[in-house]
Length: 353
Image: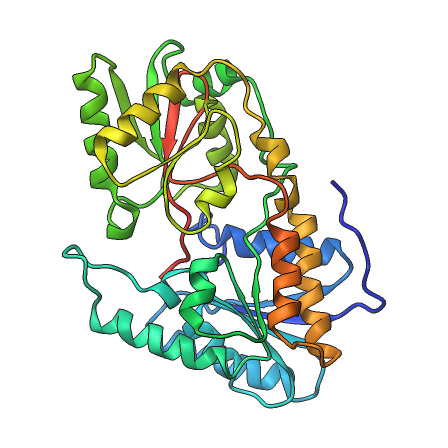
């Protein structure tokens, strides 16, 4: 789907982020790069501030100084910060309106192993909520996050876009051959970092144990820290419907797609859904169901937010709901557990810490 160039002028956007793909970490912040690329395709000019690795405080200070120096001449129309504390760095200037994108645990917190929140996580939540009121507009990824802001105005729910040119169907047999997988085996793909408690790798392991108790020998494969092109191989190697626990906007994303399931946080329930996914032989309508999440479509929604800020609209409430309504039209596909053919995938898409 080609991007629709609707802007009358080439807005200049300065993006500030602590995560962005690099040669050393090609998987980091790929969704931010995808959004930046889609905005460029739509006719905008985008410059990225992504401080090189180093001490955290030094990185924040470096970003803040760069923002100040780059905006003091009024060369940018918008400063767009991604993630709470990087939004704070974007606020270190007074010439350019700031749009804040929150990504997940910056507003919802990062649970510890015992289900609570660390002092650092609580501090990030507090700062993020304060920043919501400093920004001219706020973008969040789900209704749950919107509610966590306690805002009624200048808030827009816009999920991350999908690069349909990159993520497209391909022969499962070829992908399995490239990965060295058996053609007739069952695989369950966990697409996140097992070390992050919120991703609930233990639940995935328990679900696999339940599957094996039913006589289904499935291998749990972790796909973490991979570039997007390699992730595509894993997805094609799986080629089954999506199974997910009910987090974020998952119910909205896959709730109406045949063959996909949203489950409670119970190993047996997940195992049942995974078994159905493994045995599902018909193609799903998932790709068509998430056409509204094509990154070119999402880019236009982000541009509308920019325009509302620059035109002084930003009246939140009705305006935010209008953009949100556009972003959730139709049905969707994606979530905690997913896969294809004789395998399945587990994972959850939250914002980075």
